[in-house]
Image (cartoon, rainbow, N blue to C red; front, side, top):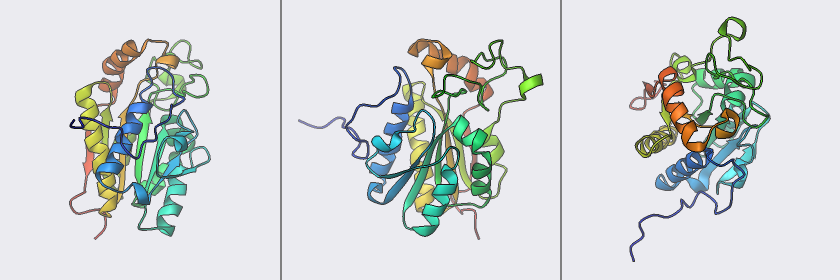
Length: 251
């Protein structure tokens, strides 16, 4: 019998701790699939964040390191510079990357560190109970914005891909989504391209993935995906924000 589909080798055959309807599992699979297709699992080192995916080290077959909150890009920088032939990626949420980890993110990007960042944007702090995050939408209700995010008080959300694409060290930045099969396929291609960018030593790469959080949004899984389409996608448009993968960021 022909094999039609099988679990990626780089994704361990274990149950995850994620809530029903959470799309972290899909994104994990896409990362593992890229490692398999590029045949780099054996030399890949992942950096797990603080957040809902704090235990990502339990799910990937490659070596993993747990970082302090927001420090994953700094850890990745040290690992990559110490082991330049390794493939190093961080897996981070919006609070980890765009709040406490903003400095580490921006400076690793502007230095053109040859690392890959998988940035999961679900517009909320998921692990700690659903507070406002840097990417929470204007008017969005959270535990700390019960009347909706007031931009006159809390400021505006951060557009991470748009911001990082202005930096000379960023070789590749794309925003994708995992709300539908066609978008999942596109997300998988973007993640693979980001890893390939690193393998070919082109510079810093980041893929931002719009993701659903049914538990903290107070919606069913299907409702959460529709909310993502109706609200997040217009505010965070999908697409490639910079692509210097042909020549790289360095002379």
